[in-house]
Length: 449
Image (cartoon, rainbow, N blue to C red; front, side, top):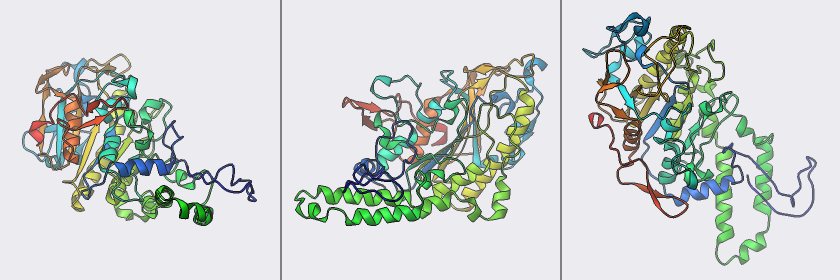
């Protein structure tokens, strides 16, 4: 929020100048005591970059069933194999689940990882956004997410566009809508999280943009004498940050990116809307349009977009759920990757699709699969990677990684590498002054470099 001091007069709306002029919250999580000007000040101290590498991190909350998606077990017994058949892709020798025909038709633009290990079993997005278990260095604030690290290192690409945006809808199981923690970097590097239809935070606590501009005029007219006598230039600098804060809060770029009515209807139809929302329960909706918004956000300069797609915790009706969620995911992910490619953005934008763990090989009496952190899967695209391949494999029953286990941190390390950050050498200082590596010195996936 912006805070302006002045005479103890009140406006007709009951706002007191002396008691503060508070504008905008930007929804920076629970630690909302920092002003937007503080955020911009912190980002500026991190420097900026003219490059625009970005990531769209699509979290499949609940744990997607690896053996029903990219790793169909045709030789497994009936109680393990499941109901799906494999289909051929446009890459010779690669087959994936029948629910994903559009991805199969453009598999040359994707990488399927069938052997992800290192999941800690927690029912949240923390590892997918940081590479670490949630309790890692919690005494100094915890590990920062990819979006927070990117904001710290590069700052905003555009003064009116935040470096990281989280599109995850609020879920009853709250950890599934985790926007990505800033960890020990502090709340200044939390992601901007739109609410409702994507613009309610831009309403600034009920204050219209017209009224905001009135208060901008007030800011410009306050305390000119103090500015003249400030030999250090501090007040002038504070005005500059306040000006930048106004710029973000009133950014036409950000508002436009969140407004899909400005998008080509034919392209919107290609992504679909993911409705009707089924099997949602306490999780996220299958909101296909979030992927289109993600592309629009990246296009205006956002460096990291996170979102939660569907509710994959299939303890019952697993195969019905995968038919529903899988077909919708197939439509919007294939549309996203093709859209990025058509716009010449795919080499610069990494797309990651994965969840917190896999599902049990054995099908339970409710036709479901339960939690299985022993192995999971991921689908990657873009980022300049060597696509059109499958990495790793599981054993005949899908119980564990048989060939080329890929640690969660290797996936995150690959994302960092694609963003132009070397996870093997870069460190950030925690609040105690101790340098912390971004990851546990694990290299990016060598097959993709």
